[in-house]
Image 1 (cartoon, helix red, strand yellow):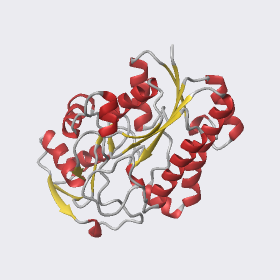
Image 2 (cartoon, helix red, strand yellow):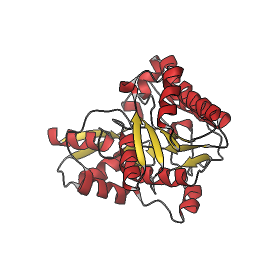
Image 3 (cartoon, rainbow, N blue to C red):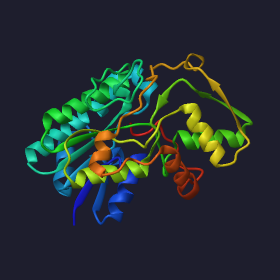
Image 4 (cartoon, rainbow, N blue to C red):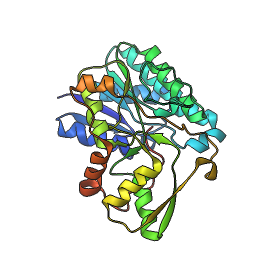
Length: 296
């Protein structure tokens, strides 16, 4: 039986999805998180990795509080770069274990007319994006022959608070909500992402991969679709980013190209509205625990 260790698997949106998919596929999946010990302690990390002796390590731990990262860059760097660098070093020294590390669309910024590919040069505009890019580089430099970086975006899914659930909860309290309309990205269902990630792990894929659902949307369009699918009478009022001041700069266009993943899978990732429908009709459970913007 193949064995996996999921960092962030007990409470994270993506980690929980990975645990669910791996178990369904017959893997033995164990989790490791901040509640289990200090993930910045190299000795602790080495001991846990040795004890589990996993075939694949999935790192779904990240500092995802984008605005807070602007005020706490060193703490964000510890989680987003130092931890994945340590994982790569430990696995390199052990001579065993594949690493799947998750990154973000925030490594890109600036004006754009077409989806970003894995070959496009990243240029993050925020501390969060810069620290996540540093984590990517550390992993691929430290364990190039046994690691892949999976960039994803705009996660929604069961088990933890996310944008879709936040919108629907707000609509239960109010008749109208304001949502940003001038940021465009790739909404992604956590369970779909988990499936693709396990596919990559099973084939021991290396390098950088973009893994998101098909299509693109603004935050406003994603909110409108969720509201329509749940037949809520709530009204959405589009607002510009400038009317919603935030500490960290968000990418205006961060849609990710999935041509490489599509070729690998033999099919295109399904469109995000279809995935959203599945989530809302079969998975969505109100009252999940609070969380941040997701494992991006």
